[in-house]
Structures are given as C-alpha cells and as structure tokens.
Image (tube, rainbow, N blue to C red; front, side, top):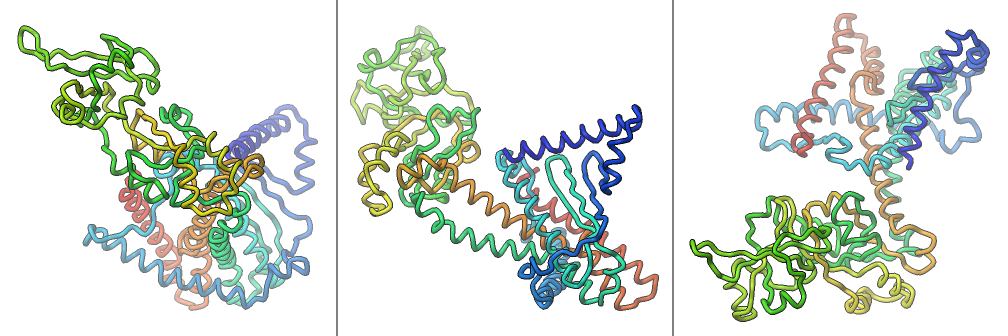
Length: 514
C-alpha cells in the first residue's frame, strides 16, 4: 500500500513537471512559474528543492532535548574515526583475502535486491524504512548545526523511482567559521542519529512481546500461524490466512527455525524419480475413487490422477497400468511404498501401490493444521491468555486435520508468510488483522537493518558521503602539500568505492543472488 502511494507521488511529480514546463514554455502562462519562483521552489522530474527566504535554525528551545549537549556529538566523531580507520581497513583486508584464500572469506555485506534475495512483497517495508532513515539522518545534521548557530537554508526531497531521499543545505559561511571539531560533529551527526535509531529499534523489537500481549498470544512451541499466501500459489487451495500450522510432512513446525528445517528435509525437484507411492486397498478403488482410464480433467488439488499396476502383463510381457482420478486426501492416508510388494506386507494381497501423476516440479506431501474456524471457536470459548501452552495443545488436538498438498515444498518458504502470534481473544480478532504482529516486526527489523547500514556506509570515505567530507576535514587540518592532499582526497574515495563494490558482488554471489 505504501509503495503504491510512493510510486503514485513519483508519477504525479513527473507529470506535473512536464505540464508546468509545457504551460510556461509553449503557452506563455507564466503565473505558475512565478508562483514557484516567489517561494524559492525549484522542481525537476525527480525532486523538489525549497530555499528559505530567511534561513532557519533547527533545534532551539522547542527541540532542546533533541539538540542535546554538544558533548553527545563527540560520540559521532568517535564512530566516524572507528569506521574510517577500523571498519574500512577490515573491508580492505577482506577484499585481499578473496583472492588469496577465497574459501575462508565470510562476506561482511550482502546487498538487498528486491525480487532476488528479498521478495517484492517486502518492498513496502524497505521503502518506508528508507524514508524514515533518510529523514532521521538529515535531522541529525540540522540539529547539530543548529546547536552551533548554523542555519538551514534549504531542503531538497527527491524520488529515484520508488526510493525516496532528502538532504538539507546549510549556510556555508556559518559552517566554515566553526572550529574543526565542530565541523566534524556536524558531518558525523547524521550517521550518529541513524545508529541511535538502530539501538532504539532493537529495544522496541525486544519489547514487542509485551506490547502485543493484550491483543495477541504467542503460539511458539504449538505451531505457526499462516498470515499470507501468494495469490498465484497452488498452496492457496490447501491453506488460508488464520490457519494454525502444526507440521509439514510429519515434521513439527513449532517455530520459525523448525519450519525452515522441515521444508529443507523434504525432497527437492525433480520429483519424478522418487518412486514414492501410497498403499491403497484394491477393493476400495471402485467404492471410493472416481473411475477413469485417463488422467482426470478436474482441478489440480481437488482430485489427482494416479497410476497403478495389478502385476498383469500383456502378450508381449509389458506390465499393464491403470489410471484413476482420486481424492488426494485419501492418497496420503496410505503408507509410503515403491511397489505392490511393499503394500502386501502392510494390508495383504489386496494392497496396491498407487503413484501420483505429477509434473517434475511438484509432489504430494502432507500438512497437519487447525483450520481458522476452529481456532476462532477456541479463542471464543477459552481465555487462552490465562492457560498454559500444554493445555492449549490438549484443546486443539481433536481439531487437527491432515490435508494433502500438491506442489513444490520450497514454495512454502517463498509463497507463504507465517507468524508466531495468534489472536488472544474475540476483541483482538475484530479489531486487528492476523498479519499485524508479523508486519510490525518486519518493519522494525527492516528499519533496524537500514538504519545501521546507512549509518555505517555513510561514514565510509567514499564519493558523495559524509565520510568523504569527514576525511577531507582531517586532511585539511594535517596540512599536507597540495599534491599529496589532492592525491589522498581523490584516491581514497575511489579505492573505497572499488573495495565496497567488490565486497557487494562477492556477498551477492555467496548469497546466490546472481
């Protein structure tokens, strides 16, 4: 939803820019351009820039707590020094080890690429977190500058596609009059605020169970809650939002770790060579199954085509196979088998091993769950906030059902979103969507990750970063010769850019992004 709003604003801005340009240049309607000029507003297809008639000082009495004492900003200078002279050399060393002993290198940075190592459905969280991180970063610069009497003369907001950004312009004359240490404080203040945001968000994540306690119940050790299913996934036939998932393929899914472990334990495609069938009683075929000599044309998931042999051969010695269109839920009740002989030991001579007829990338597997309707009845009739998890297990046990799922088990990780929180009562069921805890945690995790990344990367001595400004201030104070000064000012950012790119590419390859 938020992503759609951002993209809508971007498109509206591009259209407005060309409409205003057309009205001004081709039709001579100068009133619009004059209105913008009078207010010192300049516009481009991707940005808006506002310059104040009277420069403003951020902070002051109203924001005294946010401005803080200047000693607080010494911390930003210390972090910047640690990043430039500590983290950057580590990245440089790590890069050299990629070529000397590549097997021992652990990539310190993996880029987030939507659609590759991050599903597109999480793009909302990324864009919103990026907006908050950028705004906090610029507020840090403005508050620190205002503390030392430096005014803000302008603000620029831009959109690169769906990714927002912003920066503030300070009064250069006032800034240059500051002492070197104060200029370093202002330069590093943005990253400092990002790192403070990271610490605050990590604290909020740890407090989330207490915040959600009244409206949601943590079902960890019981199962996982299905919150979202991709609309194009065949798993939508078997699952629905609000179901409580107990196990997959008879492997307990009591938490996120076990869920991933259970999925990875199941076979991977292609599945046609597994030779895994299910035992069925021959006398039950006509009684319970829909007879068909061809594969059924019914919807996949509701009925399934299987093949089986009664150990009868034709005149040239080839085994005759029959095909039936049957209910998948009945298939999974039979034990696993490879041949009819496996079934003889289990259900006698009348046993038949039926093999599902499925594409290479799909298989038939089982899942046990408690449907949403049963869970709503549970939270209506019981105060689950005040009973133990072992008691809840006893209550839901009679309502657990087993369903057959046709598809690729790995889709469960990509196409299905799960949570550890279920509604704690009828009131929370009415007022909060089941996705609320999961979305809140994803937003907080994304905000924490971006705040830390932007804070540290912005302090690296690279082109167009605060780190470059920081290192330039240090080089100016050291008073090297003009040749050495220029060499360091241009060589160091270029080296940093190359090193970071090499690490990003290596991290992407290690994470199988490419």
